[in-house]
Image (tube, rainbow, N blue to C red; front, side):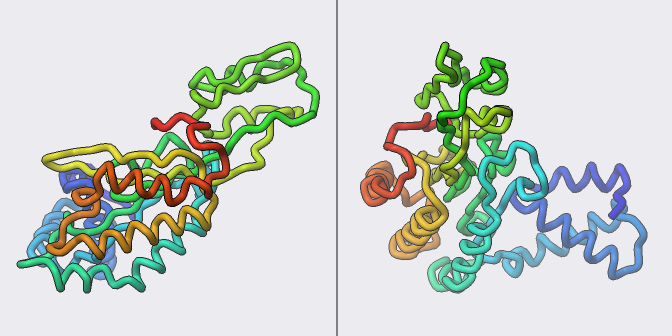
Length: 277
């Protein structure tokens, strides 16, 4: 739907963690009123109504994602199926009802459990500042197909994790972000991405005491990643007695417990890929 410049400026001032919801509501209400475009008046009217009834808008959880499945050329591993599984699971867990039983006073958006997906390390959905962060990954493997020494893989790797030797590409997995770009540009097929999965990071947040999420070592297939989400939700419901956020409750000791629990589920050896983003 078309927006005026004034309306676009106004919507950008809405806090980012509710901006998508407010924008969708503005467009819905504008359509219902028969408006052909969104003006500043529609934004202000909907924003006031939205904020006055904020508690009604709290769903209990948020699942956000990048546009990887929309044809993004950077996509390392699509997460659409996993997103649907996680969303369905969280709905069944009735997180809003759980919060209503534990939070004293009105529910606010900062009470929600936040999960974010990104289909490559560019992480356009900003998952590293969410409670549960899942990033698509493609592990490069050197095949027996002869290398033509074209150097495309070296050029494509922004981390410098690929070098060429006489026998072909040599991979430094300690620097590799498993983005799969080297695989995609390798026309002969010397590099292949047979192992696709997800990096999982836990416990990120913004606010008064921000913290980037901590990354589990390894790459996990869809089933293992989903089990990690289930484990974290169970942890959250057991520990959050007053509506505290997962990231406030989740300590380094809890993180290491998850590492041990799931270390045998990784598609690569622990420490086989760089744990940064």
